Image (cartoon, rainbow, N blue to C red; front, side, top):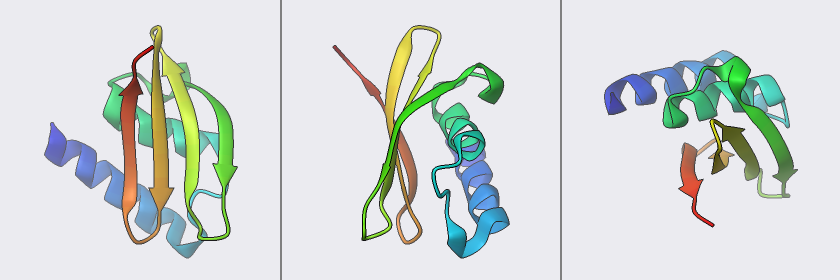
Amino acid sequence: MKTTKTCLIVLLLISFGPAGCRNNPAIYQQIASGYSGCNSKDIQISDEASDLNSNETWIAECEGKRYLCSYHSSAGADCNELTE
C-alpha cells in the first residue's frame, strides 16, 4: 500500500510540475486520499497555508478523522492523523 501511495504522489507532483499545489483543494484532496484511505471527493480541506519557502500545509477531514498534510517540491507530500 505504501508503494501505491508513493506512486500516486509522484504522479500527482509530476502532473502539476513546479507550480506545486498552490492552494488547490482538488489536489490536496487527492494527496490526502492516499494517506487516509478515503475517496478524494469525500475529503474536506481547510486551513490551507503556504509560506515564502514554498511549504504548503492544510487540514484534510474524512470519516471523522483529521489529517495535517504538507507539501514541498523538494520533500514531497505527507499527511499525519491528528489526535485530539
